[in-house]
Amino acid sequence: MSVKPKIGIIACSGENEIGGTLSRAAARIVVEKLRPDNTVILCQPLFMAGGLERHGGQEERDFAKTHPTITIEGCQEECAKIAVSNYSGPPAATIHVQEIMEKYPELQPESKRELGVAGMKLAKKIAEKIAQKVDELYNI
Ligand code: SF4
View 1 (tube, helix red, strand yellow):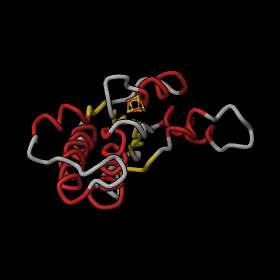
View 2 (view 1 turned 135 degrees about the vertical axis):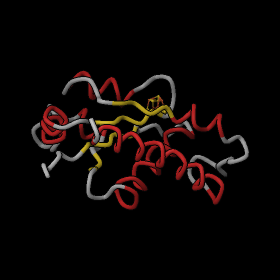
View 3 (view 1 turned 60 degrees about the vertical axis):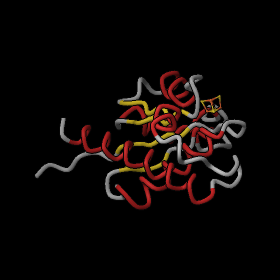
View 4 (view 1 turned 45 degrees about the vertical axis):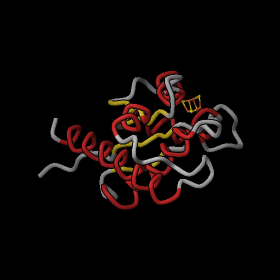
């Protein structure tokens, strides 16, 4: 059985959109609970700061050049996808949080800072979608 490379998960860093909070919560669930052996989190702000020597972002960029990545976008601006594409190459897949939010209107997060019970359930739904994409990429 061949060993497959880990997949980098990059959530957008949005603080003003609920989608940003959800994208980061979902990324944590994937990497810590759903697919811990197959995924690692790459930090988007660090990724973008990679040109500065005192930051470690070059490692993130190099990882993304040699491993598949999945970006998670809190809104249509697709900041994570743009960052990865600019510095390392196109991501293998992109998950749009808002599309999943629209499928589960009954799961309303409490606020951007505190997702609450329903918001965490929604983050789990987003995480399951990401995990499904991880499995698809592993089976290519
Ligand atoms: S994708 Fe949207 S929510 Fe995420 S960092 Fe960009 S503007 Fe903010």
